[in-house]
Length: 77
Image 1: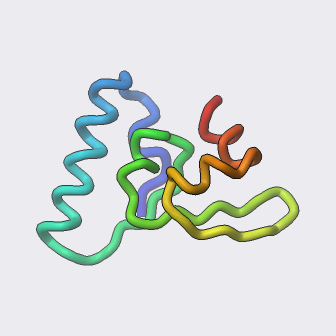
Image 2: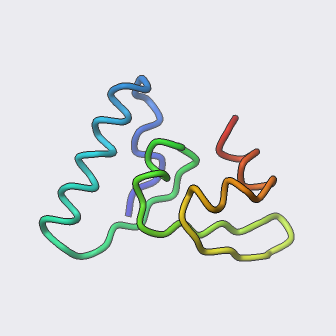
């Protein structure tokens, strides 16, 4: 489990590390739970779970969730 693991990195390095997480997970198998608002990391996740302020839970890809205004606002800050 990782909590905002890329928050102290610049955008280029953040994207490189996110790509490494994805490659390692695919190579080794298993799952990684990440708590983040990083668009670079979210875009590389197989599934994203968004829990809205009202408790609504949505599971989809980052791309699909970007159509949900509350989600888009949270990750576009």
